[in-house]
Each structure stands twice: as structure tokens, then as C-alpha cells.
Image 1 (cartoon, rainbow, N blue to C red):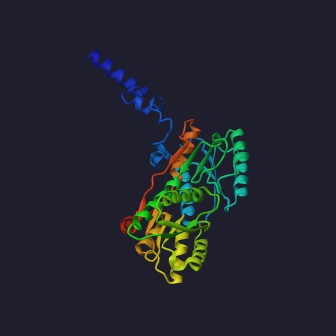
Image 2: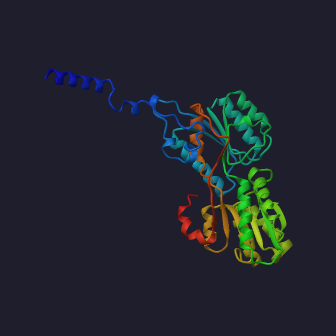
Image 3: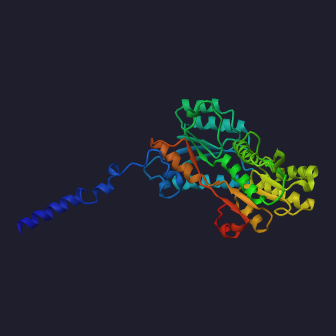
Length: 349
């Protein structure tokens, strides 16, 4: 009997001191550490971006956005703002209105405010060395999102989160070659490029033209900037139509907005977009799927703007002292008219 009483008292002692069977699972110090490069954690929102506990100081993230030049960019901004709120991160947001000097001023303001992490989507590739050195000297890590930067010292930023623009251009070209495989050449193509000297414009053009040049039937008639806007896409396409008219067989637009503007120009000219002129764009936004359902757009290459959860998780990993891979590429697909009806309800932007 005394033996049972002793065992009972021992059990009560263990429960009172938290040393029972579940103690290891409840002790944060004994939980396994995340993977050092955090690659899997950055793959989605999930529980990893749960809000900061009430007793913890909120991480302060300074973010400079390019602007709001397209539906893609608006979706990107909303994703970042919503993810910051969900993660309990104090977001200092600045809209650069597509001006590099505004972004540099914003980054310097973030440095002065002593934020924990700086992130930005650069309007152009070059001209960032000086301000990024200032951030590095202040001990503030920098994350690049969406677009890349061209700097001599790549240690000036920690990681780049976003799409593979070169691959997007290659995907568009491969679709066109397959689509036009039974059409006798030469196949006349025009191209609507994004903002000059921006990473997506440079890389999409490079990837597209690398593949096109391998096929002697493909002839690029013209390539000019539509600045990623619907209005300019329409204006440049109107000029192409005045110059080349019905000789144009294919249009490659660096984003959906320019393609939608070009569709208006083609219809006003008296041609049928998607039939008389094959059209391929990049972004895969909902408006592009609606155009495919109408038969006016043939294909859109996905460029996912919903980078907010990955950015917030990356900020948390850095503040926790963990390492990140230098490049984090988002997973993306290619969509054609044949799958538009099935996929349109899955589009979140």
C-alpha cells in the first residue's frame, strides 16, 4: 500500500514540474531546428508565417515597391501587405511610382529608421551599389523581390525571391514554335517589351530570342517597349500594324496588360486577335484567362505575383539568424486556351 502511495506522489511531482512524457515536445529548445537554407519553409504561407506572439517585438520590414503599373503589380502589393498582417510583421511600405531615385530615397529612409530587414522590387537593374553598401554598413539585410539587380558585389543582398524571367521568354518561344509548326515560313513576329533596362524586359527578351533564333522559319520584325502598361501596349501595337499590317502573324507581349492593349489595337485595325494574329503573353492573370476564353489570347506564361508569404518567411528566417539560398525561384506553369475554362477559377489575381 505504501508503495502505491509513493508512486502516486512521484507521479504528481512529475506532472507539477512539467517532466512528464510530453515534456520534450513542449520544450522549444529541444525541437528540431529548421533546415539551414529555409528553402522548404519559403515554399508557401502555411503555419510558418503565423503572427508574432504578443510578448515578442514585431519584426520591422521596410519595402519599396516599383509602383502600380499593372494588374500584376497591384496583386503583388496586396499579397505583401496581407502576408505582413498575417505574420504580425510591421511593414513600412513605400510606392516608388516607377522612379529609381524614389526607391533609393526610401531605402535610405528605412536605414535611418533602423528597420530589421529591407526588401524592394527594383525598377531597373543597375545603379544600386551605393545605397546597398549603406544598408550593409548599417547591418541591415536586404532581400530583392521579383526583379534582379546588377551589382559588382552580390553580398550586398541576401537573396532574390521571384520568377525565372529568362525561362519565361523561352517558354513563350517554344509555344509559338509548336503552335506555328504547320505554317510555312517565314513566320513574322512582333514583340512588346517591358520597361527598358528592367530585369524582366531584359531576360524575357533574351530567353525568347535565344529560342527563336534556333528556328530559321521565325523572323522578328520589330521589338519595342510598351512599358508594361495596357495603354502603351496598344500604342506600340498600333504603330506595328501601320508599318507591317497583315504581315504580322505572331505577337509576344512581356505581360498581360500590354497584350490586352494590343488586342484592342488589333480589333480596331480589323483583324481577329488569337486567330489572324497568334498572341502569347506573360503573367497569367485572370484577365488573360478571360481573353483566352473569348479566343483572343492563345497562351499566357505564368509569373506569380503572390510573393508576400515567401517574403515574410524570409524576413523571419533572417532575424532568427538562419541562412537563405541566394536564389528562391517560384514554381510556375504555362496556360493555353484549352485549359482556360478549367483553370480560371483557380486564379487569385
